[in-house]
Length: 233
Image (cartoon, rainbow, N blue to C red; front, top):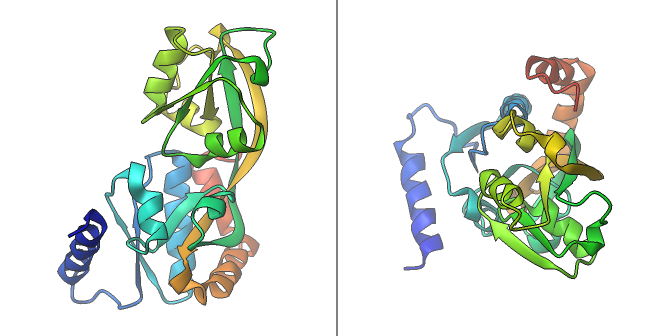
């Protein structure tokens, strides 16, 4: 039995183990890395799905394989991802409502060298933003893919790579005391996060979009952003 069939079977067991009161209108998503942005997105989407009669259930799931699992229908989608994930994961459909803004940043060891002149870069494999940027802005050096931001910063600090591409909010949340001033920082581009659902839920997208727009008009989106101090991003 393939690992994805095993995962699907495990999720089916999980659903049957949920309280009997749980609605059949239940969607399952993986738990993202714990950041203020993630907590805001979870709260907002739970509110939006409740508006259309659905319940969101968050499970612990290997973040490295979450996109593949969502594309294969094992998960019901992704809580928040950049718009470009649809290029590599065609079964994921975007809900056209920006959840939050952030910057893709480059930290580098050399002051005057430009992105294309770097000989090596470290990126995080489970976040497609950096790879998407590299695909659109060809890079001739070595790209080293690591599992987490700590490994990226270690490679940079030890000068084993000349630069690393990061999500600014992940850097601030996971390593708030990291001395960014010791390196040269460049904002590569502003980005936005969107909610994605598997294509079998395509009919939910217009309803969910209207629900999110309603929450925005009622000021609840702004309230949640203020609650998690996201207004500065």
